[in-house]
Amino acid sequence: MNEWLNKTWVIRIISLLLAIIVFTVISLDNQDTRTADIGSFDSIFNSSQETQVLEDIPVSIQIDDEQYVVSGVPQTVAVTLQGTISVVQSTATQRNFDVYVNLEGLEPGTHTVPLEHEGISNRLSVEIAPEQVEVSIEERATAEYEVDVEFTNQEALQPGYELTSATVIPDTVQVTSSQDIIDRIAMVTAFIDVEGLGEDMTFEEVPVRVYDHEGNQLNARIEPEVVSVEVELASPNKSVPLSIETTGELSEDFRLLSMEADVDEVQVFASEENLASIESISTEPIDLSEITESTTVEVELEIPETVRLLSSETVTVTIEVEEMIEETIEDVEIDIENLANGLTPSFLNPDTGTIDITVSGYQTELADISSSDFQLIVDLDGVEDGEHQLPVEAIGPDDLDFLLARDEVMIEVR
Image (cartoon, one colour):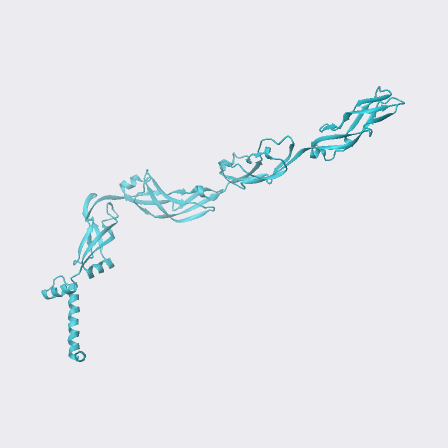
């Protein structure tokens, strides 16, 4: 075998045969009619057929779009190609063909027209789905509209802020569509999402949308399609007094000395209109019945519905109270009055001539109390010789309750 392959004329014959085969294959793909001999080669090399469906093929419209508006034409269609593998695959890969509806020469109104194609080899079988469509042709109309701005998520602005103005650039657009669509236009709007916004901002390339009275978006050409929107914010606020509210009563054993918050005023953020009616901000009520000593408590503030933000939602309140106590003042001397001349008194019981006094009052009232604040008197007017059980009169501060350890004494007069 190797001897045959080493012969020059054998190599030339094999090369010629291969060249004939390649030429035949190419000819079968590029000729519409085949000879009987070539057909035999086709049955050998190109007998495989392929069907391929191409989805989402765009549809173009042939009409004077400066004068007419067309509806009813699908944006895309499905195209089925059938033929030899090489041609189908080449066409599917390159997609260098067009699908269109030819509306040239048709008058305004409703028409049923076929979908056509161009640029596909006539060696392929082509099916378009749908094969035909019902279209509506209307005369084109153009109108100018001001662009409104609709804000979404206003409740999610940064706390304390409100929208004050919005400037649209440009503030008008031209809307082009059928006269029927133009007549239905109710709103030409640019939507702005202001969630989290806390400063003035310009929103670029905001799409403009067209809607009818029921809020349905309309299909129309808008020029320009996008606008810029300059949004301005404000944060109206003022400082108002803080009012500390209480509920319940202190126990009878306590009295309130002072109750002060760590701030005297609170900064309130609200609309200008609502700010005018806000005179103060109150705390949540503090229950005094639970207070048994001087203490410091953190109290939440009552936030009116019209208020967006307070400088603080809580305050610290310092409550000073004092308790009713008892204090004993020992050995308060008893004074003798109206003793007759020549007589001498002496105390038998108590023999010290002193009495203890129990004083009831608040801590601050008793802080400086002493025996000098009291006077104990025994009146000996008309008393003669002998032993006498006599009452003791006590004089002390009017704002204090006090009690003598005994209210009578035994005195001997001689």
